[in-house]
Length: 371
Image (tube, rainbow, N blue to C red; front, side, top):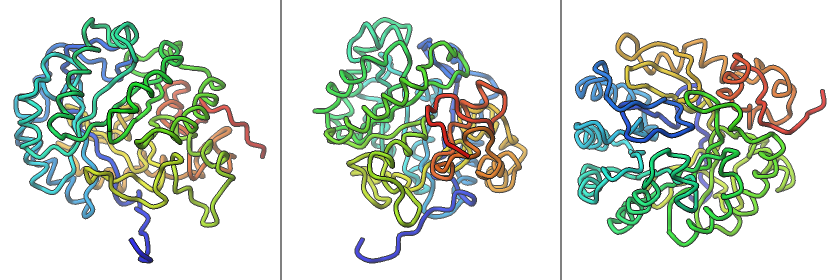
């Protein structure tokens, strides 16, 4: 990029990431499912026409367009999924899709998704062996189906992201998951930390000390892995990286999320950008559920309104909920006095799930700042 100025995205004006939950229908019964997915689709899901209007509304955020993630439940349970992917790609969106790991994800469907313009497939893998993964997903065979989906995506040249959720159940298996993924040429490993919402139970969370130790292990792992690593619902990984790399940069920002991370915002091979500044609930992230409700993220179930009655752009930019979440001066407890609060801010979703206050401190963070 030469010497040209790098523009930092203004998360008060537009999100980096827009997630649209197309449906809550899913064949799996995952123990941590934030959506509490069910077998059948809801009759009041946003229709195809409403979905296309929503895409037009998201496009109003302006260029560069946010990354669009179509999620669920299982978004492939929507018969109009190919039409929606094509409509989004035709409007210039980079589109990622998160299907469930079931036998329903066939090579033929992946071909159709790629032809429709899908940029990236994101698949969940929560164990290095069937015994761990299938216990997590509560359906025998999910591990095998997931591996077949991964193989098919790679054979088709469809960029692949792997999502893995950290719980007490599978924490010790993560080095083995990393070793399994290492030779596969994936685009990104997204490591989620359980938020106790939906079917996720508080007792399934790792302790703050285990989280701190694991984040340091993840930093070490990312130094040798041939793909990028990011965390979700663990923004204090940014603090761990800063500490491991010697503290704040002169400009007060932290441009890296792993030793392999580019120092500036830049695209992966599939053209999908990574945010230079940290994305958090309502800060660079917005979530629309299957009925059109607008949330700061899928893990923070406090609605700002509904896209059937209000503008998504206006809700994100102007609603008090989003203003509060983007204002570090409003944070309470340890997060409120933390020197890393602008770069981390703690998981607002976990704070809400545990305390009922989305501005409370993040109970999964081990760091104890001094006033």
